[in-house]
Structures are given as C-alpha cells and as structure tokens.
Length: 377
Image (cartoon, rainbow, N blue to C red; front, side):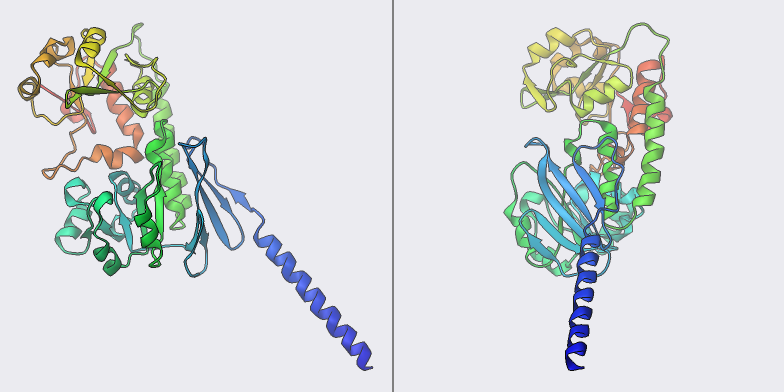
C-alpha cells in the first residue's frame, strides 16, 4: 500500500512538473507581432506575461541595439547585457527631446512628464506651465544631466536619444532602478517611419490601440497628399539649409528632408546624392547649382528678409531671395525658442507635407494657410 501511494505521489509530481514546463513554454510563445509598416528601428512581440520591444542598430546593419522586456504585472527592474526588464509604466515620465514630447503629448501623456531637458527647448504649453509651477523639473542637456535631480525625482521611465556610441552615464541611472529607454526615431529617413515611433512609445504605457488609430490617420492623410498630382508638368526646385560657420550642410538625397520634398512634389537639387546625413559644402558650390532655385528653406531664425541679408550678403544673389520665395519652419516658435516643428511635427508629418504641398503648388500662400512654415518677406 505504501509503495502504491509513493508511486501515485511521484506520478502527481511529474504531471505537475510537466504542466509547469508546458506553461513556461507557452509563456515564451509569441502570441502576436506589432504591425510596423515603415519604421526600421524597432519591433514589438507579445507573449503571455510580457511584451518584448527590440531596438535595431542603424549604424550596424540593423543588428540588435537593445531589448526591453515589459511585464504586465509588477516586476523588479532587471538589467542584463543589451536587455532591460521592468513593468508597464503609467506616470513619472522624463523626456529629454522635443520629438519624445511630441509623441507623449499626442498620446495624452504630457501631464505625466515630470522631467525635461530645458524649458527653452519646449513648445508644449502644458509642460511650460508645469515647469513654472515646479511640477516638472529641468534636468539639463543629455551631455550634462543633473543626476542628483534625477535620483531625487525618481522617475518611472526616462526617454533618451540613442547614439552610435553608448553612454555609460545612462547605465549609472539604470543601476539605481530607473529604466532608460533609447529613442532612435531620428535615424528614420521615411517621414512616416519616423512618425510610426508613436507605437514604440505607446507600448511602454499599454496604449497601442490608441497609437495605431492615431498613426493610421496620419498615414491616410500623408498618402493622400503625396499621391495628389499637380497640373504643372515641371516641378518646383528646392534648396535647403544655410551657412553655419562658413559651411553649408546640405541634406543628402536619401535624407528625411529630401524625402519630404519629394513627397510634396518638388525637385530637391541634391536628390541624386545618396546620403542620409548632411554634406558639407562651400557657398560657391551651392550657389553654382542653386542660384536659380525656385524655393529656399534656410534653417535659420530671422523675422524678415532684411535680417537674412544682414547675416550674409551673398544670400541676395539667389533668385529665390529676390522673388521672396523663402520659407522657414518657425511659425510655431515661442519666445523661449521652443519650436513645434521639431515637437509635434515629428509625430504629424502629414501636416508638414500639407504645408509643403501648398507652398509648391499654390500661386500664393497666406500665413493662416500653413501649420509650421511662414514666408520671409
């Protein structure tokens, strides 16, 4: 009888163990994968107990840059090589760049931002008011963060800009139990790909359905504008940028900027230069190619054409200068210097494209017709 009871107990233990093994296996089985259509820099996989967000390295053939394992139930932060495990977040957010604020704001999370870089970089009125009311703390630039303030603040999550080289200071923050999340949206050259990072941000807060809906609307609007055809048989030519320290940094033909101009139906003069970054050029080189350009988008902060010519007299040699076909993306810039073009504009490229399409294809453009741009007169 004792022998029989012993075997029954052994059998029960084995069955229970096998069940647990099967349960463990099932928890590591992918239930679904997020629908990422344009962005190259991340992927999201869903399991029974957690979701796995994988970042890909654009500087190394899109190998794994970092992984985040987000558990649906509370769990202790666990840091391993290229992987960070923690729970879903709902408040206590630090965002150190304008585009991060743009995504969070669109998801309705700007009121949960308790730490930012500097007030002077911010356009969002909610955050500016919270800084003034001491509800949101200025933490400094990423290169010179005030770590004492961060450790005192004890945020639930910190969004930082990812770079080619790792920042050991961020590892220091993680060791205190604060998750650091790298953002690589700025490396996406497709405007819709960059905007799709709202899905990446949303995943940390279980807001995927909202992000999918918001992005679908942006995508629909963007494609409708991109596919609209002008009656003109010739395309307007475009010049971008201006002199910085005596050098003109021209975006390459495969860049985010070049793709925006192409999607708006214009001919970017450096479209054949197969670069995603900027090309350093001399003024003479730019002028020789672009002296008769139709439209010019200098990256500079001026109020009128007189200020522009005072900065560099040679600017007056361009046809676009004399025709006053110069546009700046500073329409939504506050007195502190915060520019919404780099904040909500990243999450809403359809509004940027709408502006560009009007500029290129309408004979006259009124100030109130544009979201982010204004004409320098």
